[in-house]
Image 1 (cartoon, rainbow, N blue to C red):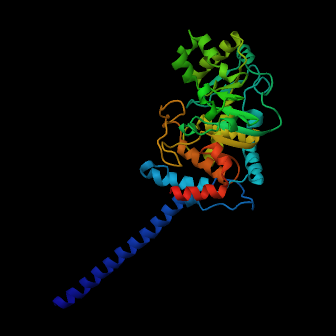
Image 2 (cartoon, rainbow, N blue to C red; image 1 turned 180 degrees about the vertical axis):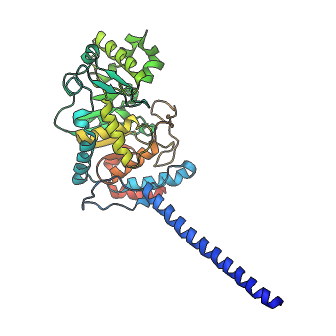
Image 3 (cartoon, helix red, strand yellow; image 1 turned 90 degrees about the vertical axis):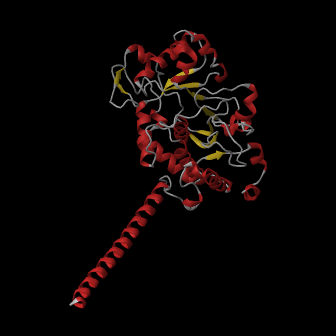
Length: 387
């Protein structure tokens, strides 16, 4: 009797164990595939129809994650990518520039003008969660340039200068200033002692309205000091985010009026929120899902529409130098941390690195004079010795 009971019981236990094992194996295979797919998606290259000029390098050679629990490994991986010989890939650049232009229209529409924004039209703010608008009055209209201030033809060479601490002791000043058109971000200091590293030439510079609030008392009482602070930028275009947020409009208009009242040669212009919106949609489709693109990244995107050759300086999101891991300040002029809740600097840098490796633009992460003198093969050998 006991034997008859044990046999079905043993069969049930066997079936249960086999079922559990099969479920575990199935779950593991599904989970592994899903994780692999998710990881590949994170490192998918920026959408460019790759030419045969240069094959896409394996994604795992570069950056998979910017979590700085393994910062040294990440920076070493980036340094290996950067040490590869760089060559401009004209076909890749032309395809990507055309793609940006057809999606974002920066060359025609990045700046608010009297031609594209007539009196009575409604400007939709880009930064407010609800679609808030402002009507273009005659007074507001008078602050817009009559025509697009950027030329119809492309510049041959452009430097886009970020403010990263990696610029300290870079000796990149002459190389930056040698470009036909130089773009800088957020009214950075251009003192004479910094010139050898960051240069002094400026054709376009952006300004964050927080500077007007913090340094110049919202331009209620310190209008002259504000205008005097712009002297280092000569007759450059001053690009203002007048219509990004509702609160910015009044501040930026005060800046424009102060510049005009004191006859400053600098030329104030305003970002077109429609362009910023198009740019966000485009880069969102490429995997940048954070609420706002950084000013520097927007300037790089614009430069890729306006310039035949784009070189980047001062773009580096880490606290350690890629060559010898010495500590870096956040900016070349101070160590204030970035506003991480808004910008995804490491994720943006990942896209810039991919564009660098595709020959679409060129990043500069070291001593510019040394890089000019040392051939690419020797740079690779030097990097292997450091690692």
